Image (cartoon, rainbow, N blue to C red; front, side, top):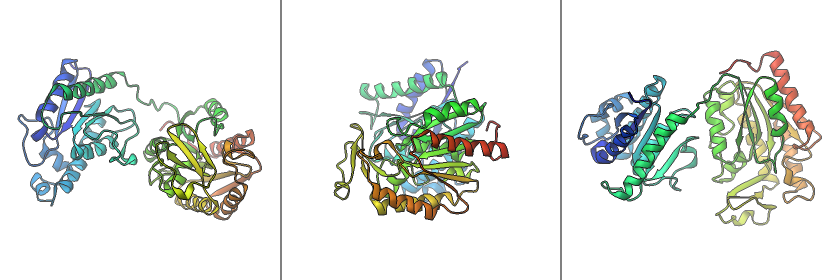
Length: 413
């Protein structure tokens, strides 16, 4: 009896040998396999566990309708919808414990949708000719996706591509055996922050919240962290969010790739999760370390954090725009949102003498925050810095008030 079952997905009409090779490697290591065919025109060499007809039907189409849809892009998006529905259902039924998907650009496009349909903690592996390529929009990457380059295997098996395929087979089965999924035995607070050299409130908030019986998950607000935070919020996985670091919102507005997706700050409110919010580090725009700083930002305060990320300051009008957008998103919330502004600074480097110190631009931001944070948002302004203990105490005061009046549930979700 196999201990874990892996879903193997791909276009079996053109990639049968490669997909069958991965399946055989999984079986040789004691795992089980369910196969899913997402091809459209051709047929596999042998029947798969889930046929292309079942995939199309899950998207409310027949294969002939998929063929007649107009072009291969449209056809594969239909198959992606059906495959995602089926994979999610198989997971809910407990029939699969991991997925491995093979593809070129077309198969990878489908793979990204399938992985986003599966929850955090479910092993997801993609063998692709464009693994981690700039072609892939960051917000399409699910929080814990794993990818490996399908090197030298575009057409047919060889010793080079077997190296990638066998690694993926072993990795997904090993992950399925080793993974410890989120337990959800305590209510969880989702918090955003950056490294403690920039924002330090998490050091004091985490033990305080744990002493109140809550689990605390802290997300690094550098793009992928924000996406993971939003994906859990979207599913209602938090009892409360403390969205206290918002550089991803400013980055989104400025067009930086270091963002948490277009739905940043939208999902908690839509899912009925109360929000405590602060504009931590919303004064900087982040760039990938390998990028050149665009000319329009070159005369700003600048901080090179390391070789992966560097930041320039936002000017007064740009900061006003972030305040307006922050208010717009929070006012769509169906649950309470309490915003805390610390008027002596919102990250460590903006203190007097720091590389991001720009008092005029910060004053403009504070002014706009006062104008925008109106009903139904509750707004508190503190005469302190975000890294001062007074900020932590105010966050806890709001949290405890919501605990007392039942706004925050103490039941695990």
